[in-house]
Image (spheres, rainbow, N blue to C red):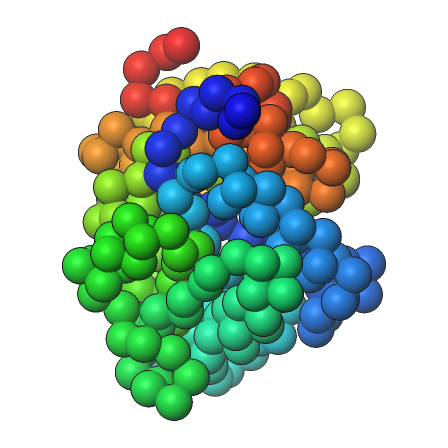
Length: 242
């Protein structure tokens, strides 16, 4: 008998850096396997699962722009990096027994199907994990914003942002070990306090569409499954105070 779940359909946002593990760049195969295993648990629990990946382990368009590269060009390379990560995660999920489809916001037909809302929802309803690559398909938008947008379009119940830390802090806990953890807050508070766990556009999209955000540490075994069962993991951002 399946355990009770708190969410019927979820959007998981994974950073590219998370896939790099301790190496800091590229793909750590053991980390990729662990991520796939956690997502497989969620799918096996009967949760319709969407996934958006970053590409920072391969290329960061914003950093390249700061170094002088044309911003739209840098962002396009970054979007292509998310396609690479998505294809690799798909293979790991398939090996874990999860039916998976990669949809891309940029046309790259030999690698992935073109993203449409209807196609994404249809695959979710058919029991597939759906990885949406290519960001929003446009420059000047982060993959956090892409995750919030896809979450709204696909009618997901929650956006789950996997990070290197176990929630939201007043400041970077890696740089400031004395930083205090914030267990719950509203989208508006996150915007006013300028917390950098997600960008302002992503927070605004979630606020306007009443999408809760759970920020948690993926490297803790079972953390993703605990999230979908409604257990207290990490920090939660909601439209109104809990």
